[in-house]
Image (cartoon, rainbow, N blue to C red; front, side, top):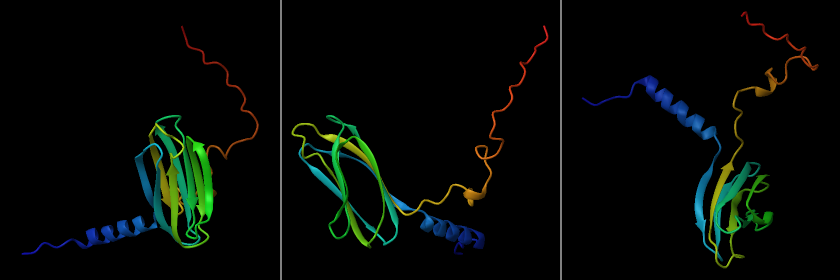
Length: 155
């Protein structure tokens, strides 16, 4: 007798897969960057899709690296030198493979450990329809609250 998956479990699995497809994709990595070296990474991005790169040097030397991002046509769309950390967000103007590189070529003796987080796609809001919700920060009077009298404790 073969086992069968209940219909409710199949529907749940399908919903989870569809939800996963809506979420942004990307990569998060910590890697060693030797002295006098460069390391590049590549990601295909659709036209009009937003992507972001966050990075930080976590060990080595003066905690700095050079970083640049190129579009599929080889145009440099971001370049920073000797940075400890930074963030870059961009909406792809053309479809294709975008390249981002970290360089430690200026260092002759100290290797670095670099962390980066590369995300592709818009992140969905934490709560649906967040813009129309009243929160503690948006509700209430604009004037300062009146002070409350001190609490008296019987002795």
